[in-house]
Length: 139
Image (cartoon, rainbow, N blue to C red; front, side, top):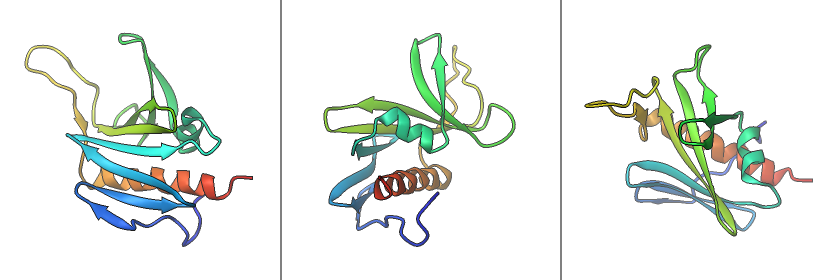
């Protein structure tokens, strides 16, 4: 549940992203190339736990032997938000995009993910607000 009226607001706008200040920790959300990426400190949590608390379910890609996380927008598998996590020493990174339909790889075909736009930015703000709320209410 989000803090009513206490969600972090951007304290500065950087080219392509936002900077949030949260309990002396800086959360930088920015686009790198065409990707929407977020960096969060661990603050006593692991990345998997935090993204699952943001209503994402774990998804295992057998073809690439890789775990990622999805949040469906309706009753079917698509459209859905899709997140990859990368863990570093002092922080983790969330790489977000929106899958409109199943990828169809082959000659002349590409991944159907959206990496920018209002819908993706709104989800970026939602994830940031939820993690900020988790950090603020840590017991």
